[in-house]
Image (cartoon, rainbow, N blue to C red):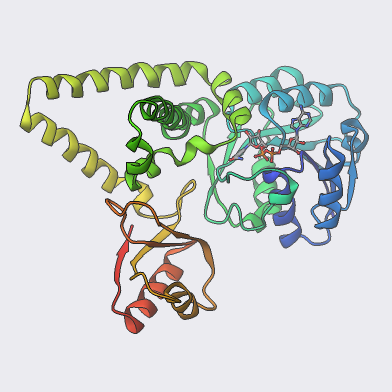
Length: 367
Ligand code: NAD
């Protein structure tokens, strides 16, 4: 049966969801809301939406499914607005917000289970880009697409959404909203705080130690890449998950104090154990096994500084789909290889490794 899907917020996430729905259900009608006219135009041009509006209320009554893909505060405001609208009976409402408890609580407080179905959603993939222009049909491939049920989630709500979103090629997970916010505070929210703190510290240090900027190498880059994220989104994430985040900060202070103690006591074994424990724990984590949030399959190639060397490797990989390619030009210390090529799945990575090994003598590292 043909369905009408209403996506509010045609940015990176909303636009990518729209493209993925179109991929699997080309006959569904996609209606889009966006406050900026420019994004509405881009959405029409790129086939992200069939019809667009700048008035959120106007399309809501037409929809079988409403997906709120706007910032968290705005998502909550839209939930309140939807509560007083005349919507299709049993319409499915969901969102895309990075934190879940406040959104699910708002839905339970304002919406009525007699009229609508609601489940929280968090598609766990992102990019440093934003807006309709950045929408990408492959954004969620292999990423986790999390559903957080509410009291307004019916037996079929999630299965209907899974079918709708099958074109994302994401991996679906159901988890309690509170648990979602706790886990993401540890693996996502707190690391962003750390990355920005580290940048702030290094920036201040560089004022009196000029070489700080030059010597910042691979390790520093890996630790701080996410400090380039969009500040608005991260501000709202911290404000809507403050308890969990504050708890992680407190816990971390204690851990830093412990390392400081080991160092000041010159406890060689203790320091060794500290690093060893981190190393083993990381090896056991899923980041090493398959693509999770932001994690791709990386191949590092040590290539000589010769003309056309990169082109030669790319020529070998013709026909293999790459997610990203990066030339690490900076300081070589603790960089695994000057050319970093990222793939979306293990199969492409294995294929690339095989062809490069067959045709070149370059040193390859897989991470
Ligand atoms: P984006 O900036 O690309 O798009 C946000 C959209 O919301 C735009 O269409 C913008 O016009 C609209 N918008 C912003 N403020 C608004 C307001 N006050 N009123 C009405 N519309 C407004 O951002 P995005 O990355 O697509 O994020 C959208 C949602 O997805 C957020 O809730 C975010 O927490 C969540 N999310 C983001 C990521 C990520 O890494 N980018 C990942 C998962 C989930």
